[in-house]
Image (cartoon, rainbow, N blue to C red; front, side):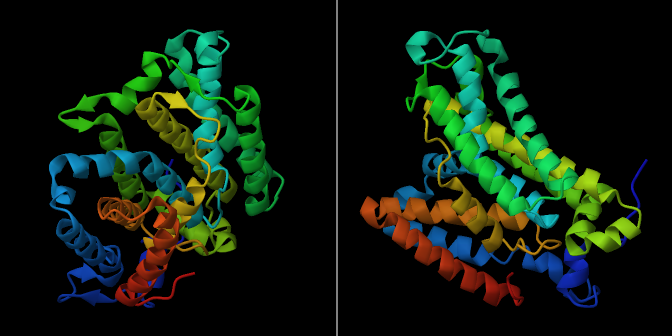
Length: 346
């Protein structure tokens, strides 16, 4: 039975224009919808700059490489965007990206590959996804059931999961992964890596759910005003718990894609990814205060960051300066996004 909602359109649209009815081009295109495309000019500008720096940038294989390498982190961006929209945050996503495939590899690979060889390789994918769901469930229990701070809970979870991966791996790298773990990260469907198809499909599903279902509108309502959403009959606690569990599942899938592509699970897999995830979501217009933002914007945010990184690499920028330039460009992109969107970022 569909859940009642407090508004007949997403809060991002209601809040974006103040009256909720502001429109452009003769009333055909809502302003809020236009803001979802705020990063498109920046993406075009980076593409042109990349072509000038090195024509290889616009070659098909290079573009596919960008999409494939971003697809794993993009799933974390998708997860974080959903969590941020309900006014929570999940710092543990980067550790889930490492631990979920790490546990699967630990239980399934042979001793020569640093594992225990306790389970058949065919179970590696279900095990990894189950670990992601379990982590999301624990986060939901602590945050929703016990009312603990989401920031502190997921920070503690991040540290604990990172320690667990180091503990089970002994600081080593799992390798000789079963074919089931490598499949999604290495195979191609219709000429494109399967990870790209999965990423695009999951973002499309997320956009449809947020934009055209009562559940999606509930997320915006909860993020905008949880008390009002609860008063309107929305099961806020259950909805937030579902979002946190889905986030854990997406992070585990992202870890599987990365492990499959690399053919291994390093003890440090995922470390530092959360900074890129937050940057992409915020650049893409997702509010840290909840109730505002779109998954299309989040997708353009991570796409822009990976395009910039690729241009810097093709331009021969020394690796020692990549992080400093990345940070500077993220700040610049935030300013550009602020100017083009016309709305303050939280």
